[in-house]
Each structure stands twice: as structure tokens, then as C-alpha cells.
Image (tube, rainbow, N blue to C red):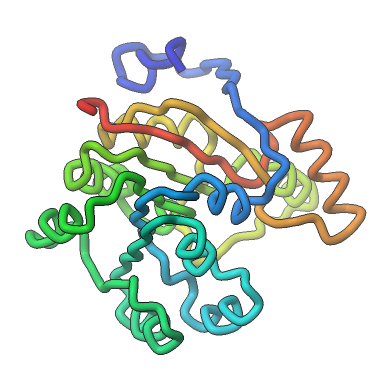
Length: 236
């Protein structure tokens, strides 16, 4: 990361920087990789709720991320501002979920109470109008924790194929796409120091086309479906 730190901090500028990110490629899809990374950790799962209409079905088929993280981590607390999502999860037997706005004055004390060492922000910041402010507040609340932030990759091979067809396939609640550089830039604005950048597929391959895409992503990690950054606060 050292070669671009001056650009991430704003001390250097280029209007056409040829950035070649060092992306560690993974064969596991996103959910499997995150479940592995949280094993034995004390985890804060930010934005755990997912899309409320899908929670029950994903719990039933074993794919709901919060359920998987809860089984893998030594402790896992989920927070979300979606009260309906919290109520739905609690109705399904999950007690480790909470309606919490991290900008509320009481949030810092509440987060400290849980004594967590890993903050997981999976596919959340693309939904937010000010992702840097959101991550900065989390870093202020939990300065000693490790952070894992994931986003859909703007430069994914799937997106390139769709663009050739003149189509953008998009979750209509998203506010932004992130590339490797812009993701790192937002983390830098939030006071987070990236330690490693990773790429993986969003889900397991279920077809020949999917397997071909995965092979190509492994050869060119910049084409990965998902970008993942492991980071710490700059003062940690």
C-alpha cells in the first residue's frame, strides 16, 4: 500500500494515475471467507439485517450471513438502524441483534460494553450517502479494533460483461460503486489504515459460466466480484 499512501492522503495528485492494486485472490465466495475470518473473534456485525423480506428464507436455507457469523465467532453482536430487521431477527430466535445508530451519543458506551475486537462492515457503505463519515464514526467508537470492509467491485468482470451489452445490473438502494482505489481512499478519509486488499466471488459457482468467471477472476483479481479490505485505525 505504501506506494499510493501519498495519493490516498491527498498529499500527491494525479489526474490519470495508473494504479495496479495488489489484490489477494480467494477461491472461497464472500460468505465463506468472512465466516472463516471471524472464527474465534469477538465481532461487531454492522448492518446485519440484510433485506428484511429475505431474512427468514436465508435463515432457513443457511445462507443468512449473521447466522453464519454467529456460529463461527466467539461472540457476535449485530447492529442496524432498521427496527423491522431487528424485530424480524429476534422473532427468529436471534438475541444478539440491536437497533443502534452509531451517531447516537450513547453508541460509544454501548459498543465498549461488548468488548469486541473485529468490526465487520460487509456490503454496507455503498448504501450510504456519506460512507467516510460513517466509517470515521465507527473508528472513533472502536479505535483498537480491526476493521473488515467489503463492497461490490465496480471493475468486476460481471460488470464489464454487462457494460458491453449496454446494461448496468444494480441493487437500486446503492448510492455508489467502489473500485480498489476509491475504496482505499474512503477508508483513508475515515482515518483507517489499509493492511491488505482482497478479492473474491460473491457466491459459489452454480454453472459452467460461473466457473469460467471464477477462473478468470483468480487470474485477474481486479475483476473480482467483491473487494475486501482489512484495516486498522491510524492511531491504533
